[in-house]
Length: 75
Image (cartoon, rainbow, N blue to C red):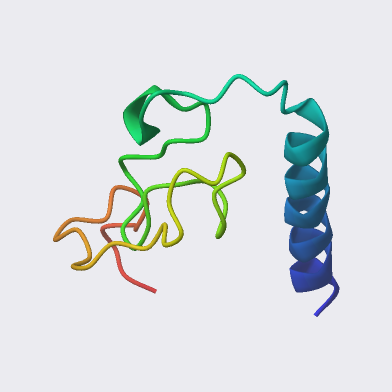
């Protein structure tokens, strides 16, 4: 359980630092954003809410068919 708490705290710190580092220069599109993640299966942003407020929903309509991060051997 402590491992999950550590992960959560790390992502929480990342989100807070991202909000602090916003300089007001919004990217023109998500593909030009620092936090754009094309390899994520269920969303296309590193965060669950767009830090630049470009889009309200960062989750994909359809998940990617291949997950780059899953292992080949299974669980």
